[in-house]
Image 1 (spheres, helix red, strand yellow):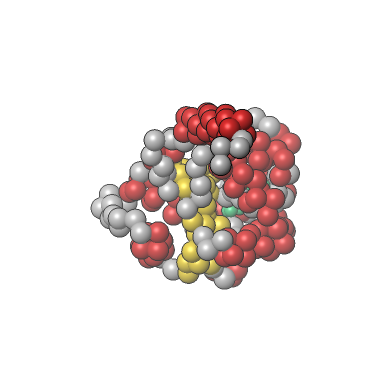
Image 2 (image 1 turned 30 degrees about the vertical axis):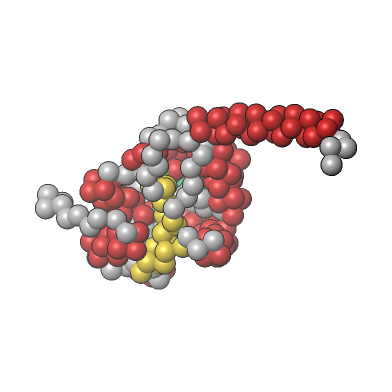
Length: 228
Ligand code: ADP
């Protein structure tokens, strides 16, 4: 032995450099990771499945923050986007993804997040994983509110009266929204099934029952709210 001390010295130096690189890599990562991450939940389902109602209960009773991409567009000043909603068409992925990215920059991950209406396409689902990954957080579950289309359409008719939403009033627009769901959103169900994140929840039953099923399946504490 003792034939190649230089080689050992070089090796030492090399290892030290690698350790230094790795620790600065870790430091950068640690800074990005929030102290505590609440659950990040995606809600999927056709129009009228009950995503908004469920989201409101999870906010009120379990402290989640609610992000509704539909509300974001309805409350925006962008006429082109509002026109798309009015026609029952999806907003293009690139625009929607940028809007969501900006929104996620200002949320408190500690509280947990309900993403209501996003993702709606496979591209959005894949981008969501990468956006969250870069922020050092991850998606917990995707809740699919499984409802038959006749029941969902009956609910939309009721909502059209209660909430005065233009896109709930016209039969052709409703048809278009269901078509978008079937063609673009349904493939996401398999995407989350294969990563074992999908919770398939029967909807079309009273909202309280859906809420109880969801909290059980997500392992949350079930809470009742007498005032509702
Ligand atoms: P619903 O699920 O009952 O149709 P939403 O408020 O979730 O209601 O969505 C209303 C409309 O907003 C959609 O029909 C679509 O035009 C637009 N929208 C909402 N979220 C997205 C999204 N993630 N990608 C594209 N368009 C969206």
